[in-house]
Image (cartoon, rainbow, N blue to C red; front, side, top):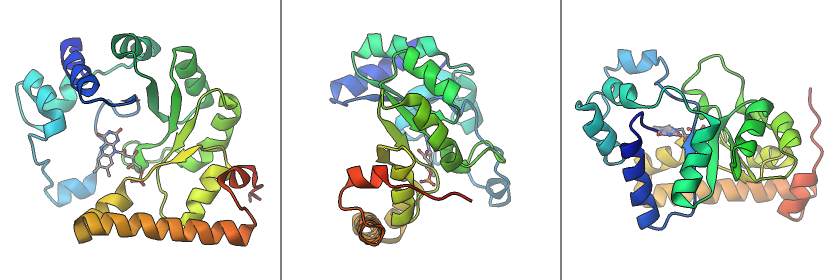
Length: 221
Ligand SMILES: Cc1cc2nc3c(=O)[nH]c(=O)nc-3n(C[C@H](O)[C@H](O)[C@H](O)COP(=O)(O)O)c2cc1C
């Protein structure tokens, strides 16, 4: 989200125009994490990236720090309502790690909660997203669906996330790794492999349907 509401409006207009079904508002990264590997590797973002072009324009510069400087530094519950009112689309709040924040998002009109720690790429030392999931799911209590990500690498991870209260599980880096190694076919093979592992886990754990997975009891140590 940009500090400049007219930039946000332009993005939202474009999203509505192309027929998106929901807006995901990321609330956990108003600036980039401190990534030493990026410094060592002299990593530069390949700017301008299509999805950030408008923000780059508004920041009148193309460095990633300029782009972050143009990003909203405070994202509030009112923003959820403002986006929903503007687009008439469901708003999903992404980057939730605390039950109180999930509650605030729902009270503000969020129609989905995305439990995520940004793949651990932002706040180094923050809790594992999975450890936050169960208490958030209890608080949400099925009022809205829960999406979960950060660290899903195996079908058994999908199983555990669903059994801990997630309705949907999302992936980022495994998809990017597949893409880098084998293009569309690489992505497809990652998804197929994950599904295969998930089905094996389901059968071995005695769950015949996803609804049964959601009722599975995990033993925690
Ligand atoms: C290269 C890269 C770029 C990302 N960019 C964004 C972003 O612009 N907005 C966002 O909400 N999350 C972003 N994320 C975080 C992912 O959406 C996701 O929450 C996280 O990576 C999930 O963990 P996983 O990679 O372990 O599956 C990015 C992740 C990666 C790896």
